[in-house]
Length: 177
Ligand code: BEZ
Image (spheres, rainbow, N blue to C red):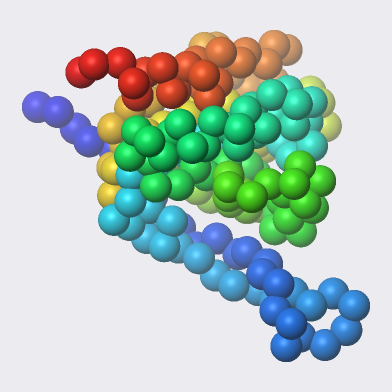
């Protein structure tokens, strides 16, 4: 029997710009659920240990952004990056990277990551609980393909980055079934 993993139902607390909000910081809370992000769409989700970290900021996120149109040609409706960071941090990171296409999902409490089975301790770096690095192809909330870096573990000294890279995910998508 094939068991299809479904993404967990979680409410994400995002911050969105709203010009009706007075003051120097015109943002408000907007709750978005797993259904909002994943319902009726075929998407790539990837996850990483933290906003502003070097490999994520230099390679993983910018390359997903650069390759976005190639993913779209393969029928991908959205590319999401989830990290155990709050909405303020994720918005600041998106701004610093100039993201236009990849959407960042704040999983500040780690609930989504925990329910995906991907929460690991990174106390060795002073990070607390964070996400193991992985990517997934998700169709209407069901995981179709899974790209998990090797060595899933707490307080891992290494930070493997390969199978969840945008180049590898795209190559797999393009490969004939
Ligand atoms: C990195 O993306 O380079 C990184 C991630 C976690 C800890 C340290 C570095």
